Amino acid sequence: MGLLSWLFGDKEQKTKEVEPTEYKGFLIYPEAKSEGGQFRISGRICKEIDGEIQTHSFIRSDLLPSEEGANDLMLKKSQLFIDQMGERMFS
Image (cartoon, rainbow, N blue to C red; front, side, top):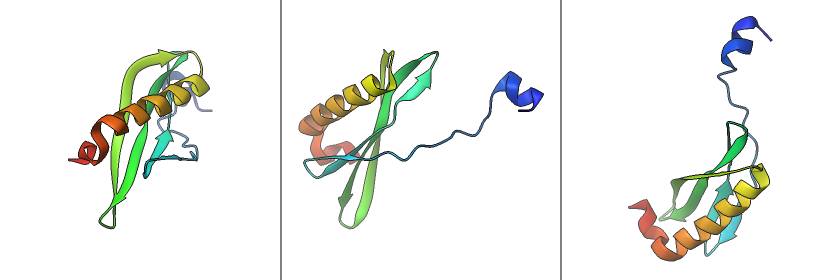
């Protein structure tokens, strides 16, 4: 690791393959973000509409101590959001 990378961090984010959860025709991708030793609830909600994949980015202010906990809560919050908004989230 170079000195500048060590001082300022590596700008390239390593992306993990995330298995989506299907809910009412939507695909939910939990992607918790590491932040200050905790994990922010984050992810994507996708659905194919008229042959095109629509994506809604989902970021919340909640921070949790574990990545698994943040991803679990993201899934629950996404399901509630889908119940409330449905396809209108893409408008």
